[in-house]
Amino acid sequence: MRNKLFTYEDDLRERLKNPAFKRAWEESEVEYNIAKQLPKFKSEKQERAFWLSHDSTDYIDWDEAFKNPKMPNLKPSTKSVSIRLPVSLIESLKLLANKRDVPYQSLLKAFLAEKVKEEYC
Image 1: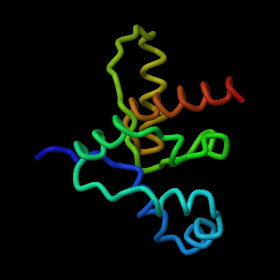
Image 2: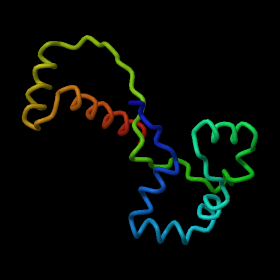
Image 3: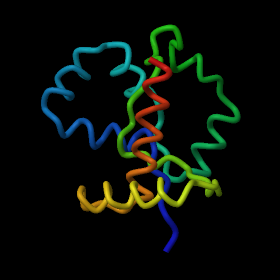
Image 4: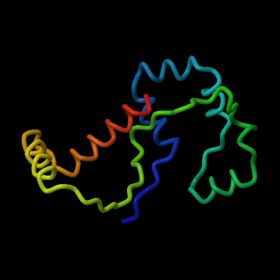
């Protein structure tokens, strides 16, 4: 079975289930009007063709757009990497992961993400 691409509309539909978000969305005239004027697409192919032949600035005021939108339901693309770590570090990581009842690779990703975020802030 092919994975369906999670679109902006899907994300918005999920967010609108939250009454507080829905109220804020409807009160936010800019975003609300943009969404109302965009056509409904029957397929990704149709949407792709639309955006190839239309300028997004006719629909979106990029000066008013969210600078770093949060889309929690989108799955980031991943890439495998191979790094050499000291055995003692791996064993310590496995012990910590076991205490938290999570796979050690997931814990390592969380630690890395936390540290990178720390460095950017």
